[in-house]
Image (tube, rainbow, N blue to C red; front, side, top):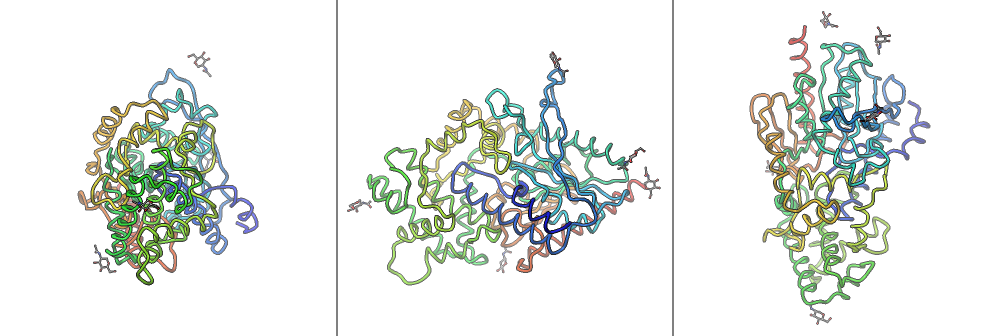
Length: 504
Ligand SMILES: *[C@@H]1O[C@H](CO)[C@@H](O)[C@H](O)[C@H]1NC(C)=O
Ligand SMILES: *[C@@H]1O[C@H](CO)[C@@H](O)[C@H](O)[C@H]1NC(C)=O
Ligand SMILES: *[C@@H]1O[C@H](CO)[C@@H](O)[C@H](O)[C@H]1NC(C)=O
Ligand SMILES: *[C@@H]1O[C@H](CO)[C@@H](O)[C@H](O)[C@H]1NC(C)=O
Ligand SMILES: *[C@@H]1O[C@H](CO)[C@@H](O)[C@H](O)[C@H]1NC(C)=O
């Protein structure tokens, strides 16, 4: 593919959804979008250097899907976006299915990443399906309270099965064309679950950073954030963790003492902090900087654990942890080219209540809906060992479900329990699934970290963050990451060999 065309297209599309799971803090969302953008830039540069393979430039295509797979009397449909790259494919070759999640996907989902590198090696057809209700895969009125109810992981898996049929017909595929699926983060779980629930459709699955165990109160998230801040492998230290903790304690004390104008000035809040919900928004945004930095360490946030810890504990003595925390915030705002920190809860709430569609980026409203109806995953800080503010409470997160969707707080726990019952949590009893996690990544706490059986295997990478294995190889990759990619590659090769034996 010609670089000129790449250049024109690249700005219009965001990279695929494998980058993270979202929470409702504004700052976390900003960091996530920033990582997306920089990974897309990286993919773009990579393609300029190495080209795309022999096929045509992948275009966005659309498949009409039933809105409700589980009620055939409902004949409503929605348009689902997908991408195909057949540039590497040999007609007897395998099919690599890349699964989209809580963000839009773009052609980069079939052009860049470790699965694409492997597709080249194994002459695979690469296909990617955007998740229903995210990106362009939604009806104009899809986000209304009436219509959002057809958003669920079960419907998403059914979408994958009808996409399988569509691709099979379009490319005249036979049993010789072995399907493997790939996904990271929530789509990592979908990848494992697609193999679990549809073993006749997909021969094996790679599930990267997949939080397969749903959990209402995900206190373990910030436990890992704290561990990562004190992990010397990534430039953290015990001193750093303590300084962060002390900084937040000072903020909490000032909130308690009612020194609101001081906080507003010190943390450049755009508006007053008189309302309690705006105070929660402030501490949530501050915590987001650390959560985002840890979750995306070395993945293009432009900032990493070592840099944050340097601000918190580097240089001379004399400055309080509180003051250093204000430096972290100011540094963050400068990097994002923002003049103040938006702490208006009302504004956040209005954004979540808005049914306006945004074809590119993270679907925040949709993801919050899925947390309320399926997963929980609330990254709370009520555990005394959590380094941030205890204002990050489960009750405030649950309240959001009723404020945005009218979903009762009491229904969320049972929904999460059902999800674990339905999919088997972190003991799925399936076969041919490879679970890959990074030990810096907070989400690994809900993943499969040890081999469950000879064919449900796990790789835990020392010192990497969220979904790092899915990125294309980089010269600065740490040795454990390089080794993990080699293991994934070997496993994929072994699966394809096993499939050849089984079907010939
Ligand atoms: C869908 O179903 C409704 C009634 O259930 C019917 O009136 C309508 O014609 C159907 N539309 C299509 C396209 O089949
Ligand atoms: C599939 O088969 C049909 C009928 O034999 C043929 O026209 C079509 O070109 C084939 N498609 C592919 C992608 O091979
Ligand atoms: C609140 O502000 C006053 C005046 O600036 C100061 O004396 C006091 O120490 C502050 N309290 C806290 C908890 O920071
Ligand atoms: C990770 O690697 C570092 C060396 O870089 C080593 O000191 C540490 O023990 C390893 N951690 C684990 C959990 O294996
Ligand atoms: C599958 O591959 C085997 C071995 O290469 C071949 O004999 C067989 O005809 C193929 N089947 C189909 C349906 O293409």
